[in-house]
Image (cartoon, rainbow, N blue to C red):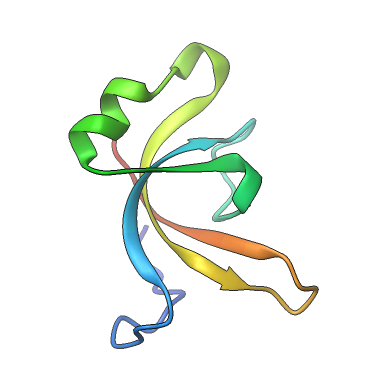
Length: 79
């Protein structure tokens, strides 16, 4: 993903490893109930379950949307 959605100089959100539930991988933002933060990329890869649509990723977040939801933004898929 080449488009930068979040200011990398900001300290309000962090770049993190995660497992993301994504029925369609075309999305670039996910509500917090679809994201499980992991301690490392290796842990995200180990805990992923591609058959059940839980994919390893790097995400920015959480940030609050204008509707009040906490969202994570996809940086890149790890698989």
